[in-house]
Image (cartoon, rainbow, N blue to C red; front, side, top):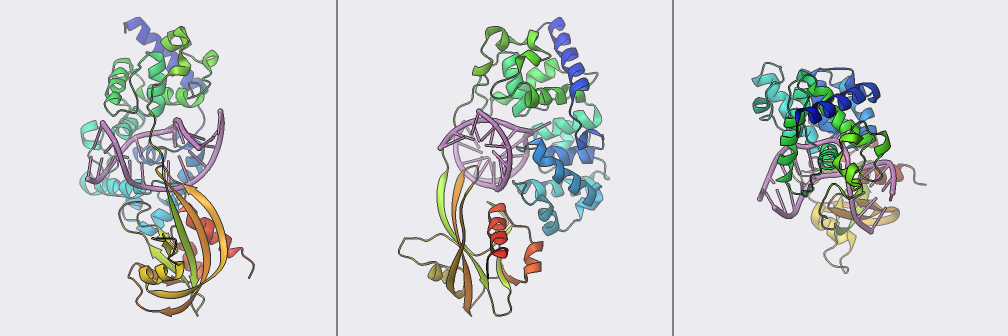
Length: 354
DNA sequence: AAGTCGGGGCT
DNA sequence: AGCCCAGACTT
C-alpha cells in the first residue's frame, strides 16, 4: 500500500465516522472502565441488544471499585439474558485485578492490559485506542469483513492464523492521529455499510479504494468455511413445589454451560423407557408426581439445541437433597439469575391457570 | 487448531 | 434452517 492510498482511506473513513456515527451510550465517555464494559458486552452481541444492559450496568456499577467487590449472583442477574455468562465473571476478575494490582488505573499498554482476565486481542486494542488514543489494532468480525473487501484478502477468516494478517493490515493503515475514530470507523462501516449480505457500496466512503468493489466481487468476501451442526438434547424440566409452597431450584456447576446460573430440576432420559419421576428421584433425591405440562419449546445455543418439555411437579417425599439444590419462595426465585429457557418456563408457570 | 460458550435477529 | 454478531478461553 502506498502512502497516498493509505492517507485517502484514513481521511475518508475518519471523516465519515465523525459525521455519520450513531449516538451510542458508550460514545459519550473515554472512561477506560466504561469502554471496557461496553466492549465486553459487545462481544458476539448486537449493539441494539447491548444498549439497555449497558445503561443498567453502569448505573449499578459506575466504577471499577463498585464492580470489583459486587455479589456474583447480583452481577449475573444484571447479565441475565445477555448470554456468554463467563464474560461477566471474567470482567469482574479483571476489574478486581486492576483495583488491587494497578491502583485502579486500567493499564495503557497492550502488554499489561492483555494480562487481565477476559481481555483478549480485540478488547485490548479497543480499550487502548478508544479510551487512551493508543494506535493499536482492534480486529473483530466487522473489521475482517471490511478489510477483506477493501484489500482483497481471500484468506479463510474462520482460521485463527488469518487474524494476524488483518492485525498487520490495520497497523499499516491506522490513523495515528485518531486511532479511536479509525478503529470505530472500521467497525461502524462493517455494521452499517459493509454488511455481510447486500453491502451498501454506493454509500461507502471508501468505495473508490475498495478492490472488491472494483472487481465486483464484494458479495464473495470474506471467505469463511462452514461450521458443523449442533447436537440435539431432549430435556425434561419440572417445577416442583413443596408443602410450604416453595419451589425447588438448582445451581449449575461453576464451569461449563451456563455456569453458576440457576435452573429448575432438569433431566435427560437415558432411554425412552425411563420416566421423568425416577430420573428426578435418582438425580435430585426427591420423590415427585408429574403434573400438568407447562410449556414445550426448542432453545438453540451456538453448538447445541435443547428440546424442552416442562411439567408441574408435586413433592411426595424429600430424601437427600444435594447441596446444589435449595427450596425458595416465589419472590426468592425471581431474584436468582436464570438462563432464558428457564425464564420462559418460570413465566409460563406463573401465568398458568391454577 | 478445534471446541466451548447465549441469545437474538436477519435472510 | 443457517448465518452473523465490537471474541475469549480451554484443551
